[in-house]
Length: 138
Image 1 (cartoon, rainbow, N blue to C red):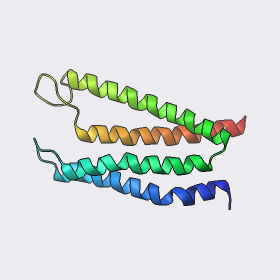
Image 2 (image 1 turned 135 degrees about the vertical axis):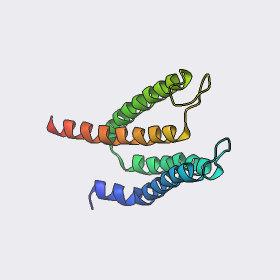
Image 3 (image 1 turned 45 degrees about the vertical axis):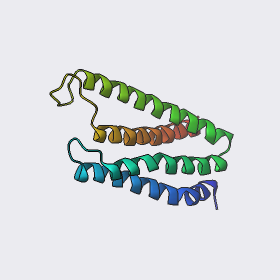
Image 4 (image 1 turned 120 degrees about the vertical axis):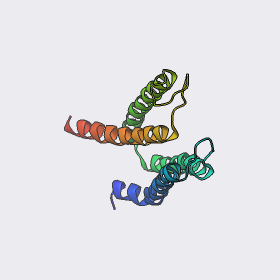
């Protein structure tokens, strides 16, 4: 069995659980939210998602060699930068009341923050694949 296959086998349950929690949180926020109330189910599911991801990342880290760890760290840096720029833009749009509200300064809708979180994972995954392919060509 190759290293990649061992890594996929070790992380598959956590990946499925994390994706299910995130999907459940998105669905809870979309279908169960009421204006002015806290969506306890969606918030709880969203709080559990990073814990599952942290456990999965620890399992992956144990199976990586030094080269793979350096690729992973570079991909994480790209995703971190993308999420920070996204948070900055959403904060500025909310402060300028450009997110659809009528108040002086609107808060950022929870769904946008969830989509930003998922976008960070997409940037991480794409960044990792691009870095890995670029390194194998050199």
